[in-house]
Length: 102
Image (cartoon, rainbow, N blue to C red; front, top):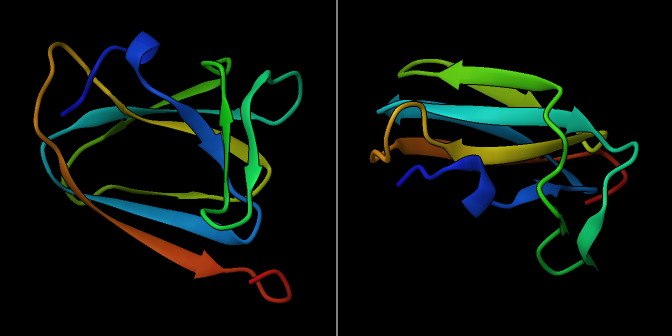
């Protein structure tokens, strides 16, 4: 389910690219650079995640069925942000290893 921005978690990865494709429903995906982000949970090498305290929003992308977004390690992303109200979204997320980092 999508939720208000304030209820989600911003994240980034070091070893993988995230390719997210929306299959059903719609959501906002927020994105910003790593600069000036407040780390909430430090890097976990087992999950390849860093979590941030509601990172700033530089870009707001409206994802609908068939749309996709690709995130690199230099981008913080905040998935699952509702558009008008909470709604169910089905999406496929592919973790693509970065050569030399996986």
